[in-house]
Image: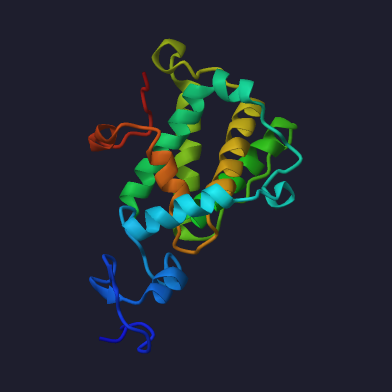
Length: 212
């Protein structure tokens, strides 16, 4: 049978997203472009591994390329980074249409807000698209909640705006590096999910996350 997408080549690969068999060429070219691929698709997993092994990072195209967040900052601010990461994952679970470009847009916008705030100027320009704005607001809310929370509860109270800025810059850069640039790609989201045990996402969503 011919591929239902191109109507030319022979259909050989079963596509779980479409529920039918398509040709290998369309699988490769339409994957996460016009096809909303599930994260456990074997062809998707294999292609991501291939891409990561051969990826060459152009740091001039990474957001906030002038800022290099040291590994020592990541280690000392693990709780803050994990809390933000967890909220991204929960939001993505609640909004399955969210893809990597939306995550990156929200992180870059919020990082820019805190970059101006840490310099003594308040300037906020949240994303225009609904899903991106929703994630922006969700991350902003958790940061505000953490600032108010008792230090013994979350270990995050008292975080300076400059520290929050660097945490957001790090995540924005991570999102850029992990993304494959495809409009429906979720390589970044799936990478962030792997930082937690699966059972963590069976818990009710909360603006405040207590991490071990």
